[in-house]
Amino acid sequence: MSKELDLVNQPSDQSIALFLQENDMDGLTDILVEALFQALSIMDDDKAATETLH
Image 1 (cartoon, rainbow, N blue to C red):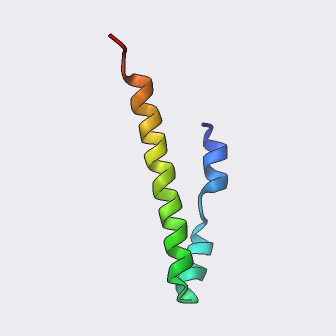
Image 2: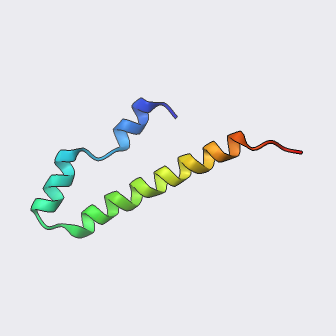
């Protein structure tokens, strides 16, 4: 995945601040969970790419 595509999917500091200001913890949780799933998916893809088949 290119870094440009990753940046499009990342929430901005401004959007996170807005969720905090409006006390919208459900929305903030949704963003953080999605970011975690994306990070885990990238890590899983990287792990699969470095493993060799024997």
